[in-house]
Length: 96
Image (cartoon, rainbow, N blue to C red):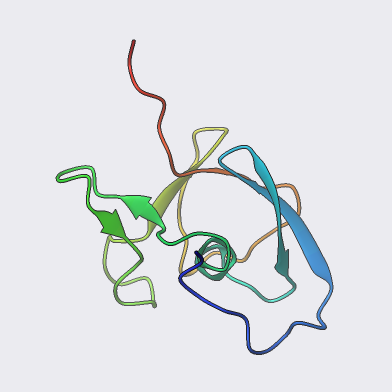
């Protein structure tokens, strides 16, 4: 179940993106954090404890919302605007 539910901007143009290989849509004006949390119950898992994380300060001051694109680029989800075609990876493949 998504952590966030859209109350505004539902009529803004859709922006397609991929979240862990699944096609999703955000809206014009969404941050990456908003786009992810309207589809998922967490932003990522903590690299220290594997506990779910959803961002903390929401303004780019802490280190809680760093995510990775499929290309390997790291970015802050709370202060980065969603762009069409982003391929976001929040679940890492387990080592064999």
